[in-house]
Length: 90
Image 1: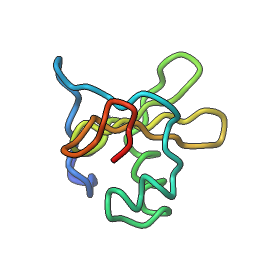
Image 2 (image 1 turned 60 degrees about the vertical axis):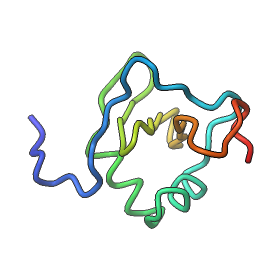
Image 3 (image 1 turned 180 degrees about the vertical axis):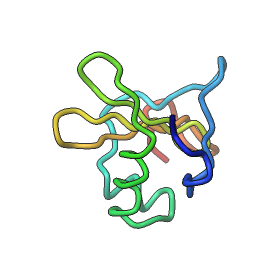
């Protein structure tokens, strides 16, 4: 079982009603910039939170963001925020 005291970014699972941006998933570097953390720190955080879901690992992050590990690469999806369209643009 994971130790919740090790989590550096608050965990917030998506709830019904969250809407996610359509289109490609964000890269590790872009997601780290969007969350205001370093890429290495975000990768380590995702590794700690990861849960197996079929062929991929899934980590639920702050504010409803979700990380998917496909192969050796982490990809990220964010809920649509203020000022974003349904296609993920500004």
